[in-house]
Image: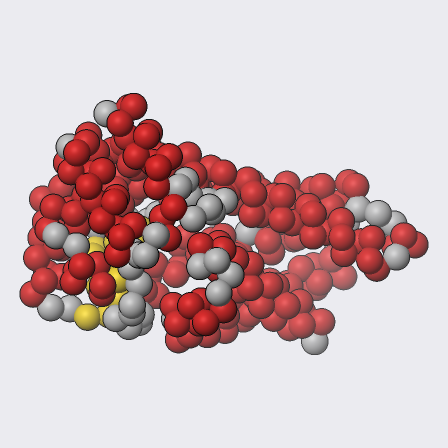
Amino acid sequence: MKAIILGITLSTAFEFISLFPLWGLLSFNFKKLWERLDLRLMGLRWIILSILLSFFSWLMFSLTTWYPSEILGGISVLLLVAIIPSYSFILEPFYLLLFAPKEKDQEIEHWQNWVNTVQPNKISVVLLNKEINNLYATGILPFGKIILIGKPILKELEESEIQSFLMHEIGHLKENHLLILYVVNLLAAFLCVILHLLFAPPHEAGALINVAFGTVVGVSCMLIIPSLLQRFLEYRADRFAAQRVGQATYVQALNKLNEVSKGMMEKWALNYPRLHQRIAHVRKHT
């Protein structure tokens, strides 16, 4: 039973933590956040993660009971915390290809053909049946690399602007940015566990002190470190795209996306540079 409780708790915590970057971009407006959530995807992800985490929690508890050992216990905990980033970067892309709400029509086939001219038969293009003013890449395994396009993008942006952002996402995938993020997320998770094992306050310090320590360590390792790396990789993908579609074309596309998203690209976010910072970087380095 305690393995199931731990699995559900970790899965629920992951879902809440994953919402903070988007909620921040929306100025912590709960109504706007609710409108953008894909509850079907979140629900299925929560169920799958809960099952996986519960199973590995049971395995961890069983191994440490059968073969008491601090080393074995440490290895078990590291394997347990590795499940969440592994799911996000490896398993979820295949779920998106198979089950996520999406549409296939002539327009998306057109963009799939365009992407194939840049990276032949290596990246799938999926149109999400959701009002999301963005494109994003996911997946680190061959045949599991995807570019997802929100429906408003095809309505609001010109062809050259869509090409610019597809090239940005291709840059992420071609330069293995997601693989780098996955490795850093794993290392950050391991660092979180190691810091907790080495420096956690004794139980006598009280529950509040222990919760505060765990929160500071968890946020520092699992949120701040990967987010700062992602900011750097966004600049890299901007340069990749601007060098291929042209600086002026890419800057125009950034401004248009900011307009379509009602100024969201100028809002501060830990994991994304602001619009004016991205434009300045593009003009300096391309």
